[in-house]
Length: 88
Image (tube, rainbow, N blue to C red; front, side, top):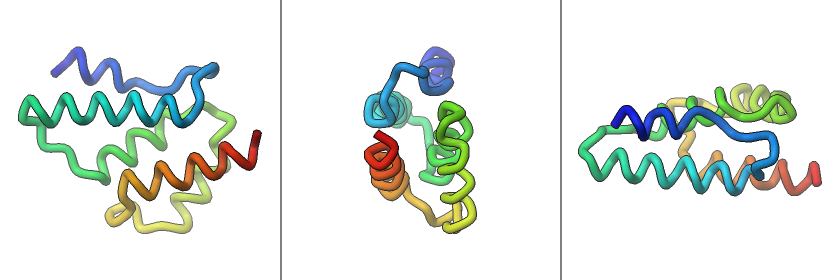
């Protein structure tokens, strides 16, 4: 479990949001398969805290616009991918 937690440390500057979210999703699924209880709020918070700095304004917008206790990982993925598409 500790090894999986270290894999979920953040995005790389050269990594796309899609790649980071796929990697994060894979790690979360592995953790769940080992019996770890992880809720969407924890996953969403961790991802928002570990995004590269160019997404800081997106993180603020998401946090201001949504109730983080109800915001799902899927909603976060959609939002971040849409923002990355606009930025590119």
